[in-house]
Length: 173
Image (cartoon, rainbow, N blue to C red; front, top):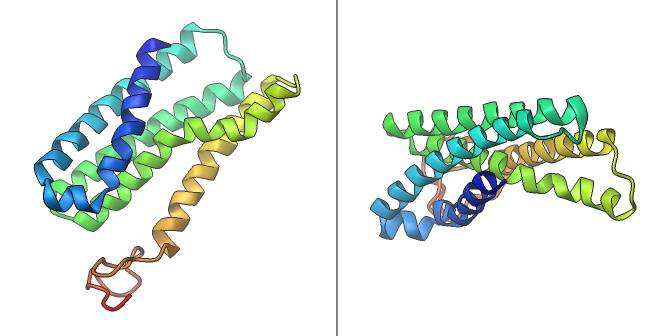
């Protein structure tokens, strides 16, 4: 548990730093190094999640078992695609993939929104835990995708979905 909780807390702490436009602009080296730490911690989080999924009794049955593996694959894939994008100097693509990676990392906690009420009512079943985990994962992924497509770009930023602007700056918003 400790080897899973600590990396999770580090990732959640790094998320606002990584998303901060001010930090990226004023201290780009700090952004790069905290991003590298985010990826490293994300990999250790995935490794510990998979080990815990095997070693500890699985509350949530096959549904929870599969969602943990799906989350790990999504975490590694989104971080790898984000790193690939920035190495190609595709800043817009990098930001989108890393927002997705943050969403995957955050989705473990979002599952609590679906599961905790049932815990409080004493209704803890494998189905509740498994479905709650999947709802947390897919719900967070859907929210991130919605934001990337429809979220309001700020002045001077490119449109989020690049809806025909091909990376041009959006003025006057």
